[in-house]
Length: 511
Image: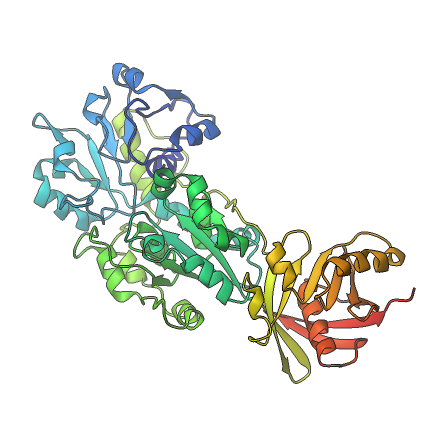
């Protein structure tokens, strides 16, 4: 999947040319360990796919590969080999061979297999010089297509944030590769802890998982392991598309030693390292320097303070500049290579990359909250935390707000406020609320939320209506806090949740 997404970056330079027919191939009979999902992804593209047997028997004008681990020497075409990460920053596990530049694959029977080897930076020529000098003359420095597509998408950051439902919140993106040294391999509980320890009205969390992890474990298993974080509102980005847009929309990235950390730094996003240092990082590489210089997450420390501090630091763009050369010029450097190998004249139009695809997150809004209310002068500040810890509301000075239909029975049994959608008439509200109160006798408030109104039913058997724009749940919690302290249950009060402060007015319902 990783190599396919990289090939799509490169192929975007050929899309408008009617002289060029593109077909895809992969070896289904001898699949790679991490190849799960490739067939489905290709099918979703509506692309022309041929068998590997047909591919090696057919003469083509160009073959593009993003991994040297295929039998590229069998192809009857000039081969362009590009990296599937940000340059060449990793070693193969348990080897001293640099991923993407394996001499045993680059050279076959004394001949260099790729006609051209695309590099993201000229400092990577030393790897070829040291490990495969025969291949150095075939190398060409073209920059990085993924990086440049992200540059071409920076003006869409506000759009990506809207699609991810970030609003005015801080957007913290988690990025995990695969294996025991990945972010999730180091601390599998980190996403759930972050979601339940950060106020939902102030922070938004998204997760990018390496396609290799999806392939190795299956989407079902990944989602099962993340189920608690998913219930708390974690947005998971599917492996096929959307991760670049998600990074562009980030205020801070918590990462491991994967390429996304460098891509984020290149996009001027602050990076916080949250994993062990992997043994597969090439020594003295830009990624190795990033892992040394970026702040590290202390899992036992104050997570919010660390995230806020990391988000306020200067991005390590100077490190990223050592990974990507000719920033913003990859299209005009790479397209001549493509057309030169095909022996075709380039199109007249300027070579440019298109923006990256929109993010389409897999997300479920949380249904249960542990809520703290604090009084500041003339306003009530409401802090909502996605929660399953329903038994600790009193000891923490918080109350529990649970959805009548979407929360679990355990959460509802400890809930102080039970809410649900109510679309009936005001005259019917009392009967509706009494029925829910009968099932939830411990709840102090039953709340019915409509399209443009919010109705409340107190344990004392009185109905009220709240007026005010915006998300109703913070206002409901503020009203509950006032009721719990025997303050007037009607009248106006100010509520702050996240970056939003608004006036709320409560009036009694007349039967």
